[in-house]
Image (cartoon, rainbow, N blue to C red; front, side, top):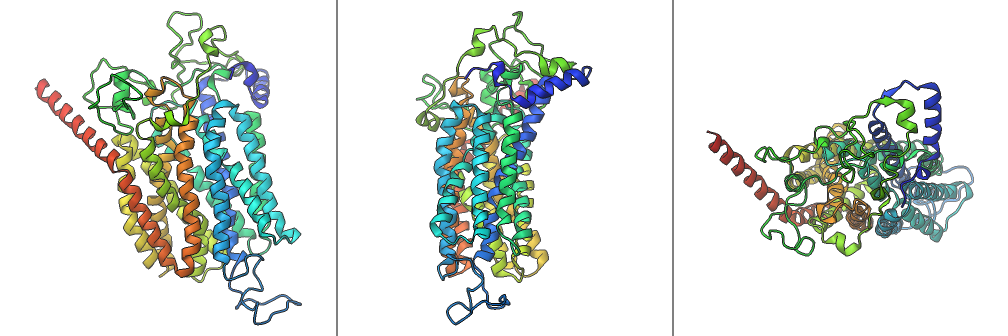
Length: 577
């Protein structure tokens, strides 16, 4: 894809024009401005994605409920056959309603998982702005179609099945698109913290989706879908106007994903190189995940300036730009707003600027150290997370005295805890340099916490709130860390030889595998819940244990690497003494 001025979105061109006219003396860093806009736009983009997929979990409580204690409207005929289901929405008014609702979830999620793998490959090869905008508009349209079924009186199971399937496929455009867009702008520094905060968009979207759906669920549940559908469609239009997916198209340099060889060994998923990827390297080198900078490293090693601050306004990361060439851009740019927004892209005369990065294949991506382990772990971590996402309001409604609207509001506390969990996991990963260990610790603590919530969560409102937030923190932490910082680290692995375009494929593999688990979890929950909600929680605890086991090899290597660093530091202190 050519990184020419033709790739600049129309909205950015308009801002340039107005900036040059009304704010010519505004000073700042071009890269800092665009990076900030990317974080904000992608945050609200994926918030809209999650907002539009949340309503079904809330509306389930009115599609199928116990009608015994409700007062029927005038003219409603009630007999022995429909006395418990007269208020339900056909075809979810039978004894198999839980299974049908679970099947509806799976139609969405299996299509989402299948689309995720395809979206990763497509996102590498097309303009991400068009890709995301089209996906959001399509997703909004089919979310709207589900809501229209209320006003139009549609009771066809195939209709709901088809709408959910296409909606799920359209939703799969979101994650590879936003992660790749962010990865194109940010390097290694403080990824865990930045992505931990940024990844709260999933929980914010879930919260907003629950609140909107909860407001309309008992009066007009169709609006629970129509409003989120309209919002994601509107955001798709905003993305089309303003999203800058490649720094080079607006005169900025892409980030340094690799740095020096020694630094990469200290800082990323590259202290072990698979022989098939890097022949001739030391076979005894150990794999560790997202390692932090060792204080024992040689002072001659170049430090990535983005490690000091991810948002530091620096533009000095393009390896192809050599010192002394006419295309060289200063590392600090402080110029007027006219120059910030209107200056032509740098290095247009540099032949390396137009070089196409080669997109990698599925097998090559799988051979990146850590991809398989984290993908399989995410399968079970996302199974747990999405079971809560699609069934928590239903569980609260069934196990407490709260109605459908109150259950939707209470379920948002799981996502409040999830926001905190994602940030904590990111900070711990940055500080310790051990992503797998961070995930493992949270998974270990989550096992007894799931049992405690299932046993004592319904005793009182206070216990429900506190335990629900705690479970959300522990369940969402590993899920958030793997899908963001870990995926980006692996997607810019040194073995790819600078092919940052591989990020979409790696992200699609990891999150696509996780999405299969996300489809399996709600499907099993819908069937198992007919035999008691206790069985659903036992399933979640077993999934948690399996996720932990799958991470064991990476945990072992990270601990070994930590011990090696400790020995190096001790040896250095002894030499200095």
